[in-house]
Image (cartoon, rainbow, N blue to C red; front, side):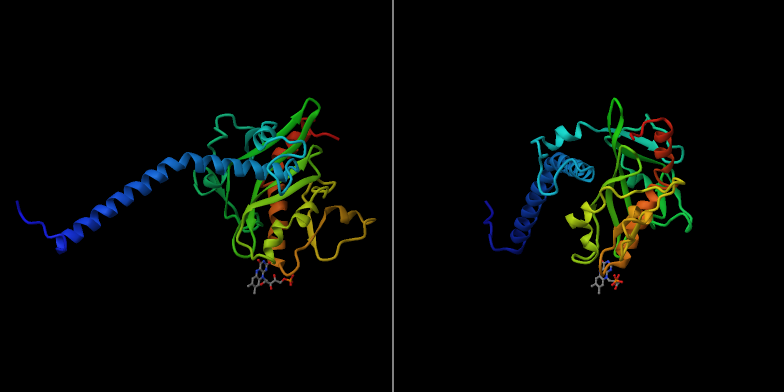
Length: 269
Ligand SMILES: Cc1cc2nc3c(=O)[nH]c(=O)nc-3n(C[C@H](O)[C@H](O)[C@H](O)COP(=O)(O)O)c2cc1C
């Protein structure tokens, strides 16, 4: 039998290659095995964000005030796909797997926005998005919509919730952004987020009218009902959030859908 020299160059290479092979098999098997768990966690995180925007889950807890879990609370929502142009529901789309952000990147499933239309700096807008509806026999209690728009450093992604009157904001929250902590990153400040609750979205003409202001109008002034405090030292992020809310609730966003719900008598109040 040939005498194997353990310290030979060929042997060192062989061991190194075998080690790389074993490690890559372990890493790729782990990645495949953990994918379903990662997907579940991602879905749970989105549910949390939707519930928090709707004011149904406290910011610092994963159960509601009355002890209900995320899954239990989320079960109160019906998820529907909506054609943003017509405001009609689209039943052919599987709402569990559909991703509006991915759809916005494909020219077959989105439209290019002109500079005039594109106040939220999206470039393209998906033809179909999703809505999360909490309804009772007397009509809609909450509608939550996915929203996004450009701040200073990148796109902010979040959810905007409306109360059953479809005019008043129930909440706004972000799950991804690149704004600077302490400046634009204050979009995550729970006090600031709470200040969105009760803000009026549409004027009497049905146009989105939200304004982020450095100085709030006197409460006797009707303009005060559309106002939210600007973030100090973060003018670009502030303007980005204002544009984002007004874009997604306007005619090029969910405007047609919200009008349709109102004209079908589904709004409460
Ligand atoms: C390191 C650094 C990070 C910044 N991050 C943000 C930000 O996240 N959002 C923002 O609007 N402005 C940010 N700014 C500030 C803007 O450049 C700009 O000065 C600011 O929007 C002016 O706002 P003000 O008029 O409220 O003071 C940052 C500035 C610096 C130097």
